[in-house]
Amino acid sequence: MRVTTIFFVIAALLMLSETQAEVVLPRVLGHNMVLQRDKPVCIWGTAVAGEKVSVTFSVQRKETIADVAGKWQVLLDPMNASSEGREMIIAGSNTIKLENILVGEVWLCSGQSNMEFTMRKSSKMKRPDVAGQNPVDELQYAKNPSIRIFQVNRKELIKPDSLHRGWSIARDSALRVFSAPAYFFAKELYSRLHVPVGVISSAVPGSAIEPWIPAEAFNDHAFFINYKVQNDPGKFYTPMIHPLVPFAIKGFLWYQGETNCFLNERIEYTHKMEALIGRWRSDWNDKDLPFYYVQIAPFKYSESKDNKVTLNKESLPEFREAQAAALKIPNTAMIITTDLADNLSDIHPSYKWEVGRRLALLALARDYGFKEIVSTGPVYHGMKIKGNKIELSFSSVGGGLVSKDGKTLSDFLIAGKDKKFVPAQAEIKGNKVVVSSNAVNSPADVRFAWVETAQPNLYNKEGLPAQPFRTDNILINQFKPDSKK
Image 1 (cartoon, rainbow, N blue to C red):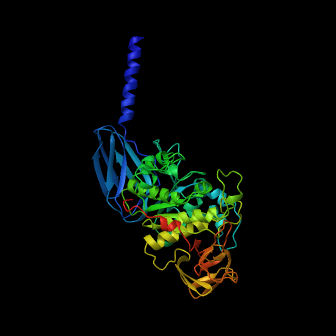
Image 2: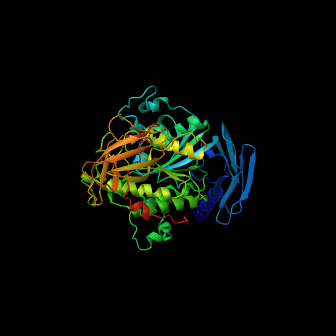
Image 3: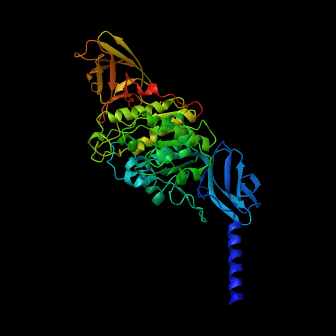
């Protein structure tokens, strides 16, 4: 019995040794993945300490030695885009062959339920009145082998997958459970670039912003020295973002804020965004990575029965102001969604295809050289008081300002120095809007879309809605980005 026992112990140790000696890859490296073009591409994993590991892809072959902790990585030289599915071979004591790999554009998409919102849910939304292929039916048409998707599972990303099957072609059952905003972003990008596009969705319904930021990022931020950070800092960052580092990407898409709006946050949310953006860019060792995000949609926050704090009808506009203040952070941009809610009692706006398209417009105009694309709606630029009227000027007017429905401009308020805002008449004059009210003889300030249910009709001719604003904006002037972030 003793000899038999010793035999089994030795056999088990040998099997364990062989298992530990194997080259293991992180889950994000797998069949069907897209590698970021025009950047060094990191391929990494674990092996036994001192083990020689080689990576072969296309005409490149790179070698390295696993360090004392068993960690290894190589950098592939920057590559041109390629729609040819090719093999990658990673060899050490074992050999891993990854198949059908493309080279193109890769974006990481994160946030809460409106980013997680699946294509299956999107297929059940109210059908928009559009010519041609209807976006509600996209699951029937999605067959493009050059669009690839990677769904992050918070419980599995840190675990290796011996089958290396995390990535999928954007179609069928894999696409049904994937982020609709991320997919439609990828689709629009492909339609313009005609190169492979990979999108990674890492989102959790109901999540605040804090779990996406490690605690030490708050400790390194001056604003939070005397501010107690709650909501589980790092809870989702640790299992759902950090394991993706340093997979090469082009940039980030972010759709989150509803949970923090329910907490009635203001400038603190802007600083939290700065902490998140700064840390994620630091993780990927690129302080200029694009960060594009969604300003949250109209919703009756003040009527919600589950509020932890008391909200009023201006709580949402003031939170949006905090989101807009984050535009001071370099290489950020924001889309507006005031027109994308068809049920103001549903916090999940229907038109995720348009969310994805508008995010893609930002990337196309800012990162891919499509300078002719107007990527945002009108943005308040300045005001002049002219007698009993206020003249407003805007940037991002594109082909010109318009009333989308042809009716009188809606959702403008005006006040004198007493701050008693009343509904105002507003008229487009060239690329400016002139605002007035018979009840205000000496106007001082204007507010636009300054109520949670506002769905205004001021657009540019490119069909993009104007950003909500107030001319007496105190919050945005308070925020000064940390130049070190």
